[in-house]
Every structure is written in C-alpha cells, then in structure tokens.
Image (cartoon, rainbow, N blue to C red):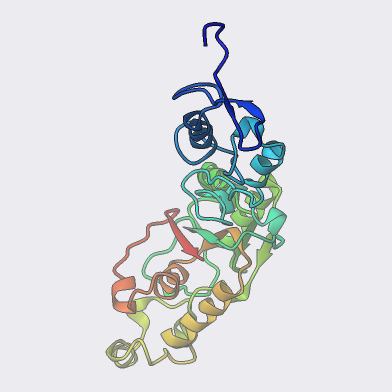
Length: 284
C-alpha cells in the first residue's frame, strides 16, 4: 500500500486480484448503498416514473416525467363559479338578451320591468278597459320613464291596446329601436256593465254582492278576478327568456304580484302602485 494501490489477494487458483477499498472507498459496498439511496425514495429522489434508479441515470426519465401529466388538470374556475356555469350575472350580461326580442340559447332568465301608465284625467269613474284621457300625453309620459327603461335595456316592449299604455310604449320602442307588441292579455280587468260609469252610479246591491265575493264573482257582464289572473298568467308564461318592458295597468301589476311573486290577492292589492311607478319581476 506504499504506492497508494490497494493490496492484492490470491484466488484459489492462484490468480491475484485487487482487494476492494475500505469503508467509504470508491468501490465499497457503502458507496453502492449510497447510490441506491440516491436512486430510491429517500433523499435525492429517483426517476419520477419508475423510482428505481437515480434520475440522472434513467434514460427514460424525461418521458416518465411527461407521463405524470397524462390526465389533464381541470380548468381553473374564475369568479367562484360552478363548473360549466357562467360567472356571476354572466347569463344575463347582455342587456338586450334575447337580442331584439328573439330567443337566445344560454339565456334562461326572464326579467320584466312594469311601469304603470300616466295619471288619468277622470275621477270616481269605473274605467277598467275603457279608454280615458290622461294628464300627460303619450310623448310626455314616454319622456318621463325613458331614462329608467333605457337603463333597463329591454329586448321587447309590451302594452295593452288601451291608448294610455299603447301610445307611450310605441314611442319608447321607436326611441330605443326595439319591437313593440300589443297583447290583449295584458288589458285591465273588465268591469262589464259598470264600465265608464261613476262608482256612485253603480247600483248599491250589485256593488255589495260583488264586494262580498270579489275574488270569485264578476261584475255584471265583466270578468272574475280568477279569470283576469289566468289571462295575465298565460301572457307571463309565454314570455321568452330575456328582458321585457311592460307599460302596464295597475290591475295587471297586481296579477303579476300573485303569479310571479306568489302573493295572495288580498296582499297584492295592498301593494300600492302610483302612476308611472315601476316594479320588477324575475323568473328563472
């Protein structure tokens, strides 16, 4: 060992071979064990895939590492939204959904803005479906509500055929460049033989009989509250998804309180709605 070479030992056949280096030497068992630890699960880490040999010695290491991403990650979610769903408010992000009154796939919410017509110029008269003058003409009424309607940005504008609703609705539709549809189902309730008469001129017995069961009994020649409600409910059910504006009668808004918001009729008529006042309804 004076020259730094390891000692030799003889085999049984007389052949000589170098003795292995001692503990910690280049060819020692400790060295092999250290290499094994580096190639295993311990400190230093092995191949990402086979884990049987050191990463630097595994010829398939790069391919094995690529195999770890065989299953793609789920797409990250934004805005705390559920998978395969739109973000908050994204289903109705287009203010004209459905565009120009037509249905559009993916938009399932129905939003309705209802505004009562302008003040009528008569007092104490049963006017129901009767055309009566208003204190504001159609242009003035449209100008009063246009900022609210424009901000709501409806895709379609609705009204009954009564002039107090139809005229301002038509002007608003023209200014906002959206369709205007007249639907008889959103007419005010019919009071039959009482239409156009002063309330004081209605026979007291007829009025008392109707008031005693006003939800189920109709005025002479008129319609019941139940029939009125069903008429408006049919219109509400037929609305396409999107934003709608209705130039409305007070009775129609009360029907929507019942149909859309689930109020009882007694509670609905307590919801006072002034002239040119707005109310919103939503259905999903």
